[in-house]
Length: 146
Image (tube, rainbow, N blue to C red):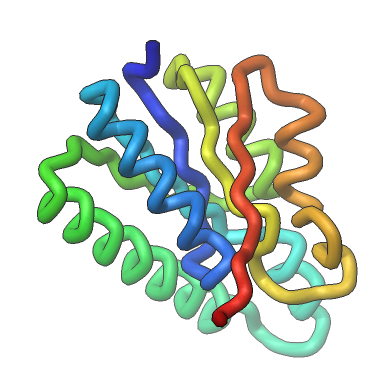
């Protein structure tokens, strides 16, 4: 049923449920998980008038590489085939384009990523992907600690 599962991530706590579901589905269906970290160019552009964004972009890239390396290690420990990709752009656009280009069967995303008012109910990126995706999108909620 699922051969390729796309797991967009920003490394936040809100994506942990999505990671668990994506890994579980990958084990069940012997699927490959494609993890995608998108450096949000809107955030970079918002500060470029204040100072040189080269260092800021490098920090995002470093953070993204770290997140992807951690997920790669976790997948390898679990015996799951994984592909990691770091891109720059508008997150929902990059996610949808990657999904189409790489022929994903399913996208698994958390409903809450980075904090912010525009991500209060459902993450704005997740909402756009759900509305525009040609493939099923499984969303996971952020669970509160008990």
